[in-house]
Length: 137
Image (tube, rainbow, N blue to C red; front, side, top):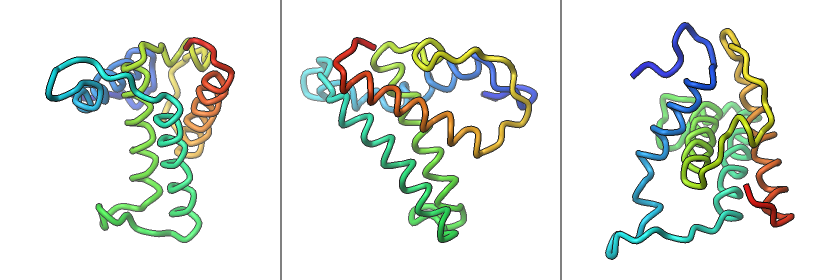
């Protein structure tokens, strides 16, 4: 499945990405013995995304290659990890990423990695702040 048709980021493409992330991580949301839903710790899940971005920054500063995918830059892998975790989180908690972040989506041709990093960090910061204040998301 091609997520980003014509190199454009659209609400539909983002929704598809989040669905794929959550489907791949569905076993993290259920008790594997009882098949009952788990009550996941949202603060911990948000902190994990933030740590991925910190690892991306650390890898970027020294130009490190990834430990598990040594043919890829740590920056690239950690950014992908953060995006995947964010996609899973939004679906697992029934968040509309577009609504939560307050973005007005317009197609972005060839999104720059710096823009994606800033948007992901911004989204995580807003989610963490909402969690800290006890707001429903």
